[in-house]
Length: 347
Image (cartoon, rainbow, N blue to C red; front, side):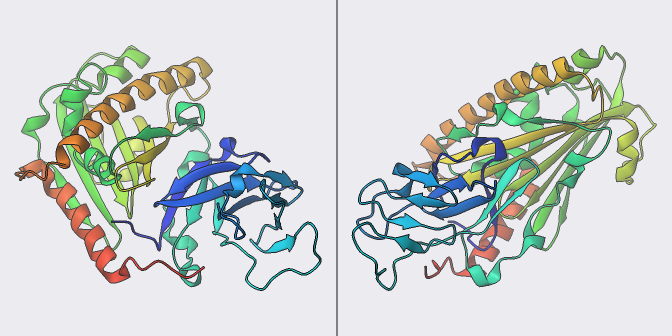
């Protein structure tokens, strides 16, 4: 199941120069490149002559030249030159995809061009706020995952897994004493849990040399189809108001932004950023955060890839209380898929 009339992350901005970059997204071959002026371009990665991927070719100014017979395509996808002839046949073009550069990501729309809507992009503008340190995940390279993209949604909508999968970094104890709250939106689901008077998150306690009990929060807002904004942090016990989001800025707040772009039905790419409001000028800490959380996410990937292998057996599963936000998001995405019909638009 792929939703098409929505935005996905195609690449990190730092991945893209004037060399062609090939990436499969929603099962479709996509070519990405920058023009001489720096504009980002996304085209169907296929020459309309004999189907060689255009990514085998070379960028010339604002255009791409096929590496097989030399057909040249401009940034709109139109063929503008064929060696050895002056006339361009009708229909000599490839599809162009809308592409937007924002928040260190390149966002692509593979659905109906008539339905492109920037307002459907998640608002992750807080990575640009003053007094915020933003770390690009994995040095600006996506993590490849041999699993379906929805498993990443499931993983982030049930953060009770951190107490077992990431015991020494994000774990802790006492989470099972506090309920999960689920809030449903038109295109989103929010999961939240507040743990009162517990030990702080181990990895942040190490970063800050923090001791003593805290009130600790775990919040994920998942926006369709796969954009998960995690909000994790803690405050001295009794000092934070769970009902006032702005109150959390006064305390230790860490906000990973994570999205899983489908490559195929059984493989995907994880793109992520980290935003934090503490030690924002500490570049050594930023480097440590990148390395530490790369290891954390590889732990997640090992779990999800193992799930994928077993999921192919089509076994029956049970649900538990912590699955309420997971099931709410899956239900929302299936409703959206049914409304969309998963029709592939014409080129």
